[in-house]
Picture 1 (cartoon, one colour):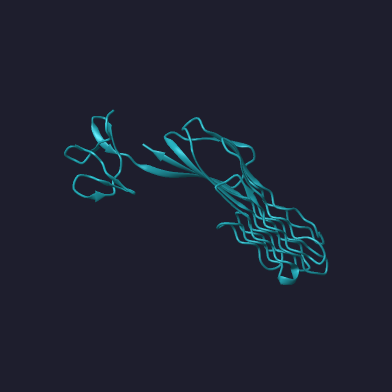
Picture 2 (cartoon, one colour):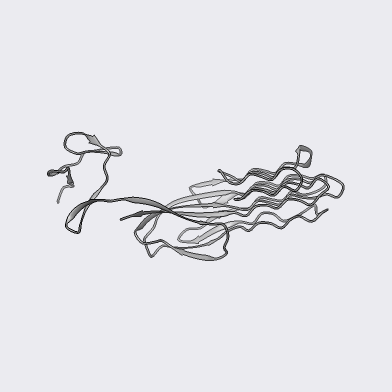
Length: 234
């Protein structure tokens, strides 16, 4: 059985691996893998190419040419802030975050994705507005990032943050604040959008919860987001 060899610039030598470094015959060095192409040795390169989706329902995507791995990131949508006539509403919860790293086969591995939409502006006096919508990936894997709950009731209570399933990371969104604590929307999980502030402030994308209305309409919950980060080699 042939032994693994590496080209050190002069001759083929047996490599000795030490974490991310390789012995090149004279010293430990950080190296790139070399391969033979067009009559010469070339260094391979790896690039990360993201596809970012802020909208879309039941859309299909296939692993691009020369891809070998993908990191999939999902944020659910934010819940809407509530409104109470002649009173203060509560904030909607923030959207959840889901992340998955997996191997893919270029041109073969396929996914279907749906991105959470923004909620409608809460009508004045509506104590139970729309909860946040979810983002989802299916096909080669099933990933789910739930939307935040809406602010609700009288006295007004903040919506719960959304929850996530299926990923290597599944992180719930932050809860919206009760009216007595200001009624701000909850932040989305893991670097997502901030919750809305003030009277009827909209949540920031991706996934921020809307703020409660202060004798006003309630704020919109933000849309979610899905990112496919493709690892591509020559």
